[in-house]
Length: 165
Image 1 (cartoon, rainbow, N blue to C red):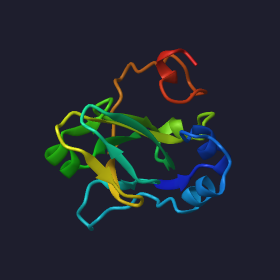
Image 2 (image 1 turned 180 degrees about the vertical axis):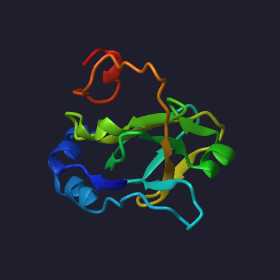
Image 3 (image 1 turned 120 degrees about the vertical axis):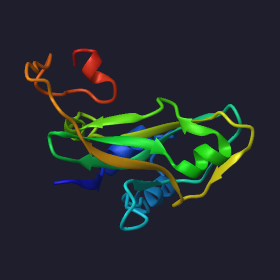
Image 4 (image 1 turned 90 degrees about the vertical axis):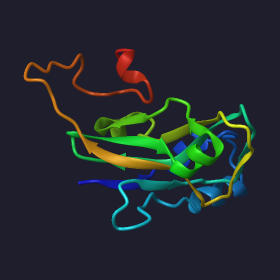
């Protein structure tokens, strides 16, 4: 079972840059587009900008997407910058590839996917609200025969598996 859902408005508000309750943020949340593939042969599910943004060369931004991903236990979601943005603008994810584990959906932050991008090119990147800017690809993974995870359940959010939480 794979699907995308919206996080709660409360979580979106908490993770958004301004974090303030206002009509604009509420409308932004209502307008969130769930990721979808552009064509029937597309591997990636496009993630759409919840708000317009401009990214100067050398600049960076973190976007709260309002999205969480539900997937099978033996899968992960790889997040990548949209190919055209990387090729034309030199834009990349700050962490190169974001690895979203299957149990992240159950984290205390509702599995809220946030995407940080960096403009390493020499041109201004403009992304309009509702425009695709990143893509997610579901992938299977394999285990070693002597697999023995440090912990059985995830409690924290982003980066928590290395901290012992």
